[in-house]
Structures are given as structure tokens and as C-alpha cells.
Amino acid sequence: MASRLAILASGRGSNLQAILDAIASGTLEAEIAGVFSDKPDAQALLRVPEALRWSRTPKSCGGREAFDTVLADAVAASHPDWVVCVGYMRILGEAFIRRFHGRILNIHPSLLPKYKGLHTHQRALQAGDTEHGASVHFVTAELDGGAVIAQARIPVHADDTVADLAARVLACEHPLLLQVLQLAAADRIAACDGNARLDGQPLFTPLSLQCPHC
Ligand SMILES: Nc1nc2c(c(=O)[nH]1)N[C@@H](CN(C=O)c1ccc(C(=O)N[C@@H](CCC(=O)O)C(=O)O)cc1)CN2
Ligand SMILES: NCC(=O)N[C@@H]1O[C@H](COP(=O)([O-])[O-])[C@@H](O)[C@H]1O
Image (cartoon, rainbow, N blue to C red; front, side, top):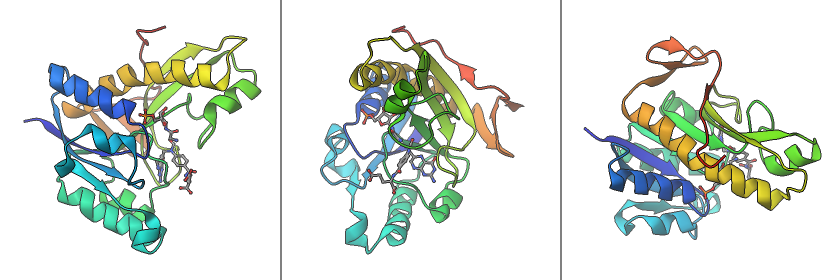
């Protein structure tokens, strides 16, 4: 039975496209339950049929809390097995987290716990880091503080701009996310007592997945 993925996205949707391509090629046994956005003009929405698209603005719902409730109801109505944040640029409220607890994943463009939040590539360059990368983690109320499941590492080049680094990280995000979603679709990962578990065993250190592009 294919695992149903509810996708939350605010932008371009290249990670969503990687998921769609993997489903189409048979390398990911999953189906898209819906694509949900806080940005009605998000390009990600255009990557799926209209019947799978949902978007509202927090303003149109009467504010952040009301938006979270409307979003949670819409996501629940799609009967997802997993909720996957891919460039979803809003902080999810505690009510949403509770409703889908342990089933929300996010891909974040840094080697967590470094650089939680926004502008991660700029911060890595400003810090003079020689290594950077991406993380897939469980989503909790604490922003980017949930248990990390897997990471992909890339070298930082001396002449890297923010755009150069963002592009190289993004190229590694796609295989990283797909490898984690394959585990999720097979029900091999779970969140338990603040840890990520693989096949029931706690992951005290994140899976370190080799980026095929590096
Ligand atoms: N409760 C949680 N919500 C979300 C998490 C999480 O771990 N816990 N991960 C994020 C994704 N994310 C980074 O990976 C992230 C998203 C949004 C923000 C942020 O500061 N958003 C601002 C608005 C920014 C804007 O509109 O440009 C906000 O919501 O006030 C930081 C990190 C998904 N949500
Ligand atoms: N804090 C969340 C965040 O910054 N997420 C990042 O947004 C981009 C979405 O790209 P995409 O729309 O092409 O998948 C990705 O780089 C993802 O890591």
C-alpha cells in the first residue's frame, strides 16, 4: 500500500519534483495526498493536478492560529501517512504539531543543530565554515529542533557565494530527502522520546548519507 504524503511547500518545489519523479520511476512507493501552501502563487502547487492543490493565506484565515487550524483540517482530510515540509516557510503551531505528532518531516538547509531558522547559507559563509549541508528531521514545536534523521555534507569552497552554496546544497537535498522518505514509506523510522529511531533502534547520530553529486 503506497504511503500517502501531504506536502507543505511555500516556493519553487524542486524537492517536491524530486518526490514526484521518484514516485513515477517506482523508486519511492508513495502517493501525494495533497500539496498545501501558504502562498497561492507557489510554483510547487503547479507541479501537481489541481485536485491535489490547497492554498490559503494566513491573512485570509484571520491570522496565524486560525490559518494553522484550517491547514490542519485540510491536511487531515487528505489522510496522510506523513506530512513533509519542503521549503515550507511558516512556523507550525503547537496544535498542528500535536495533531500530526511524530509524522511531520522537514528538510532543512544546514547541518543541524547548526543554523536553525533562516539564511543558513549566508550564516555558514560568514562563519567561515569549511563544511555545510542539509538535514532531514522530525518537526516539533521547537523550530528546527526536532530529532535529526539523516544529513548530507558538502565542502564549502573559498570562492562560494550564497547562491553557489545554496545550489550545491539543494542538489544534495533531493537524494537525501528521497532516501529518508523511502525509510518512512517502509515505516522504518519513527520519533520516540525525542529521538529518531530506525528499525526500532535509537539514532544517537544522524544517518550520514553520501551525496551522489559530491
Ligand atoms: N514548529 C515548527 N514549524 C516548522 C519547522 C519546525 O521545525 N518546527 N520547520 C520549518 C521549516 N523552516 C526551516 O527549515 C523554517 C520555516 C520558517 C521559518 C520562519 O522564520 N518563518 C517566519 C516567516 C518567514 C517568512 O514569511 O519569510 C514565520 O513563520 O514567522 C524558519 C524556519 C517549517 N515549520
Ligand atoms: N527553513 C526551510 C528552508 O529554508 N527550506 C529550504 O527551502 C528550499 C526549498 O527548495 P524547493 O522549493 O526547491 O524544494 C530547500 O533548500 C529547503 O532546504
